[in-house]
Amino acid sequence: MKKIIAFVIVAFELCFGNLKAQPFPSADEKIPFLCTFSKNSQKDWGDDDFVQIYFFVVPKTEKNPIYIRVFDPDISGKHDEVHDNFNSKTKFSVYGGKGAASNPDAKKQTPTGNYKSGIQLSSKTFGNDATDDDKWYTFGPFNPVEGELQPDGYVFKLVIEGMDGDDGNLYKMFLSSLPNENKPIEGGNAYTYEYSFRLADNKGSISHLYPFVADGITAVKISVFDFDDDGILRVVSVAKKGEITKSSGNAVWLENTHKIVSEEKNTSLDIQFVKQQDSKNNNVVVYITNQYGELMPFYASPIGGVPKFKFKIGIKADN
Image (cartoon, rainbow, N blue to C red; front, side, top):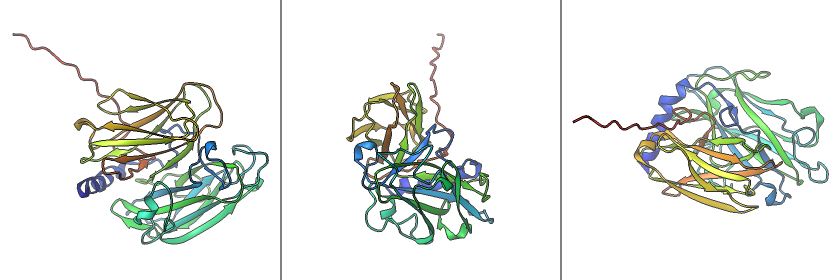
């Protein structure tokens, strides 16, 4: 297990210097929105625990203030999912300092215990307010050193909690070097251990998630909640053109285990959600574990780049 963790650290240090994209979700993921439902919602609307935790990595070399920007943080209007009428609130809180990212409770599949570890740097609760509808809200400025120092950089944590109500809050985020503009920070990235997101509505659309497979990993288990039998799950890697498994049904978890071959180690996987019908408002939750049951993070910018299947062509030698 220590070897797996050590290799992930090395991979971060080698690969983060070339990363530039900090939208979350990223363009490569093709995910319309992230989502958090309020605590009185029914779980078959697509959120299993009404709390999401995201981490933002700022390179150690960054000296200028950074900002975490959220698009459409309110619960009303153009993008959010209403049930009867908008009566909900969502709390966004930014944490840094010791334990913000390293505390084990911050990396659980279901947030319990001290998952709000670290020092709270900023917090705001949003409700039905047209002021923030379809607009960007900026948290910060933050000094990079206010994050928790980790081998890959300074890490900030954003905890998003569904408070009173029963509506769904759909939003996007961006790690920016400017307060009023989405300007990437050279070498930054973002990740989460449990992804809660909205699928596109149209048949044939494909959303992507990118976990990194460290050297010691021999198998991964992908757990999907509330896919609503809306399509298929396909796993693509440098060694596999696409392992296909069935999707989960309404308000239930489905687990799929995939063995890892040697060519896939030290690369990212491409977990694809392929829609096979037109449908609206399908929200899903996903997490992935290795053979030890440890959660593996999904990266907005995949380490090593988006994996591409490598065709192998055999050449028969002449006698």
